[in-house]
Image 1 (cartoon, rainbow over the protein chains, first blue to last red):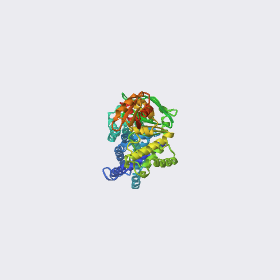
Image 2 (image 1 turned 120 degrees about the horizontal axis):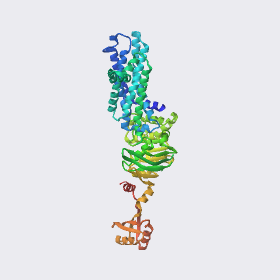
Image 3 (image 1 turned 90 degrees about the vertical axis):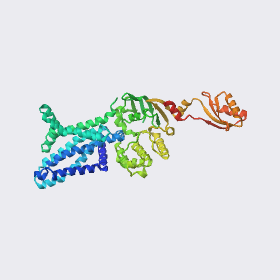
Image 4 (image 1 turned 60 degrees about the vertical axis):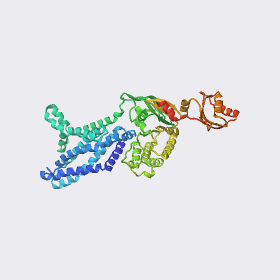
Length: 240
Length: 308
């Protein structure tokens, strides 16, 4: 765990050194702020003191931003060869994956924390449902965890960052949108797709309904993504 | 810690990269790993450092096998990979601290070792720069520093002196020699004089197999077989001197190299030396022996002979 934290710290420093962190923070706040407060079905249009609008914007912005954050994590190290140096230190493959995961989650949490002034403003405007707000943020964070693990897996399969980005986006798109469309098939297959769809679980949780099946979904998806990433990193060690 | 390699084999698809090699390196020994490109040097090093898995056979460090106890053994190994990959966006000091902590050093030790490495590797002038801003030679020093920062028992260096200027090369060689006294070092290189300058033992591999193993001297003797002398004998006609030389029983052939300067190349018969007989012959004929240089087979020649 200590090694994972060391790696996470280094990754975060790399985020901030390369300005990626600032760009992501500014863009995320810009997008979510613009659509929450100023444009389309914004808060003043709906006339309700809640953050639903923000959560559904966040649902999409994070979907696009996360692959951009994770794409370089392993692909770049593979390309420059630093992965060899890192993995021959006394760290395990799992610690490396976990470190990179933690760094991304930390950066996303920072972005979410930066939107806390929205809560304050809205709670002044009207009566805010604190439970639903908390659940909404939790939903965004859990969703981010899933997409981060998918992104890291995508990054671990290639040494090209663009490929990593696109793979993460395409795989993500299935969970984000396509599965929810496929629910229409109906029957058992429809039910399976419903369970697999991110939208189902995110909507549940952002409505303020915390069901254990949603938690299981988010956590198991994240674990599975990280497991695949570790597997793909360890592939070099599989005996011939 | 000793490194013991037993019947090590590694295949990539159908191509054999390393083919049943066995050797042992003892503490206090510096082993030079030679071989043409693609001979399997880097693959072997990657297996020792547990970056890739062992195909067949085993690598034992101390009395532990890398197959089963790699996680413990990694702490004892310092590794400088080929092409010296580094995080270019990190400042030198941060990077070395990062490496030291990953290798499990306590924070008090980290500072001590960091200062030591900056001094030993000559990084003091550049220590506040980012690695990406450094010249190739300085990057190489950072690569060495990160390999040695946790004071490892075993040092695996894949072409450690590439990109260094001659002064730096001498310093780094001295450094490796010093470390080699108490630690186990395996280094690969293309620069043959370097092997002679640093290594106690040379291992030449070709197409995944060991073709030579020994000190520079033993390899030379094996390759040379016959003694070759270059001599200058004055006060006589070259043809006469040649005639007298060829009369000697130990001499296989005598060749005139330079008529005006009376230089000859003398090849002795297998296992015999002609140095004394030549001297005696000169006394008897009142020639004057002014130069006598044993001709040494160069490591380059041995290398070429074994690997082509």
